[in-house]
Length: 138
Image (cartoon, rainbow, N blue to C red; front, side, top):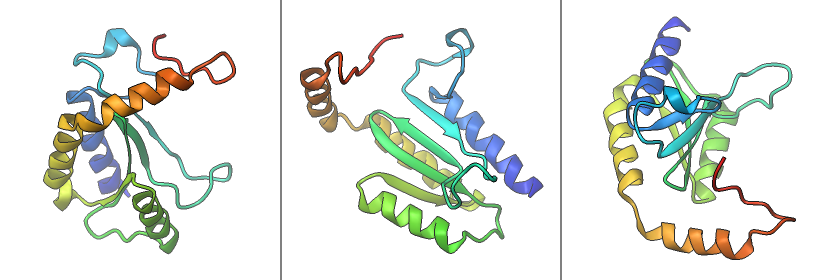
């Protein structure tokens, strides 16, 4: 478990370095321009089993990462949830340390993708109301 925790810290450090910050990070702690958000899911009695470790929103894309140590194995539920995220047009990843460089390439691709932004912005602006408040600034 210790090697998985070390890998998790490495991933989080990388995310911060590209402007993807953990939920609740104060603005004055952000060294890079924010381009994304993530939260860490803690397994336990109050959390559904099989939810990926990291849930991210980067440049409008929904991404999840189930982090595993080199010899770790995902549960059947983790594999099912990852597959369903991908079937829903999100990006679900089971990430091992050996795949970290590929993960970085995925993040670069997501960051540089611009085509979906205009349509999402239009939908967000057109459908925001007091009954469906889509906050864009805080």
